[in-house]
Amino acid sequence: MHTRFRLIALLIASLSGVASSAHADEISVAVAANFTAPMQAIAAGFEKETGHKVQAAYGATGKFYAQIRNGAPFEVLLSADEETPARLIKENAAVAGSRFTYAIGKLVLWSAKPAIVDGAGAVLKAGGFNHLAIANPKLAPYGAAAVEVMKGLGVYASVQPKIVTGESIAQTHQFISTGNALLGFVALSQVLKDGKIDGSSWIVPATLYAPIRQDAVILEKGKGKPAAEALMQYLKSDKARAIIQSFGYALP
Image (cartoon, rainbow, N blue to C red; front, top):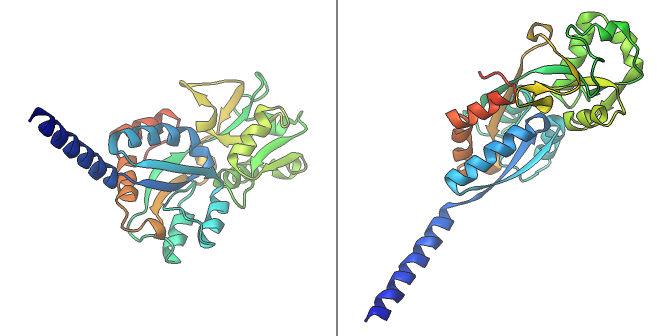
């Protein structure tokens, strides 16, 4: 008799396990390269809380746009700008009404070496460097912001021959961290660790470039998917917002 009850209990337990796994889903997310570290932390919390799994790809927003338009199976886009999600909605490739700003990016002029970049960015006018790295301004909003800053400061023409271009902000950071470029413009989130920045840096005043409003949107392939909607809600949660802020982003 006890054996029978035990078998029934095991059967119920296994059936409930199947039911819970049926509710859990895997979600494919295209994430702007500057948001790599925060997203990894957010995804871990989201997976633990919801049971859904996050399959994230990190790269340049412009490249993701092209891939999405060519049928890439992404269900959510965490863009580095607001224009790309808006454009995808207009082109019926993303869900209208799902778009929102999850972070406002900050630009920093950074060198992996100390005493290279001063606290006012005067190094741009002084010169004394062979290479300055920026992300491709046609693909990456942080690259476009870097060009805007240099033009505003009146140094773009003199610096332009020294510019080396990364195809994403991640590659740009790599150029600088490995010493292939002495300095360059990256996202603050990439170099801020526990409230400190190694090397030398100038956090560019937000008045020198258009706000880098980073928008999230559910893509057409994620339409009606509970996991996609759950992730969007989680990004708005206090837990996620605290992580975002800890990486140096401003919140909307």
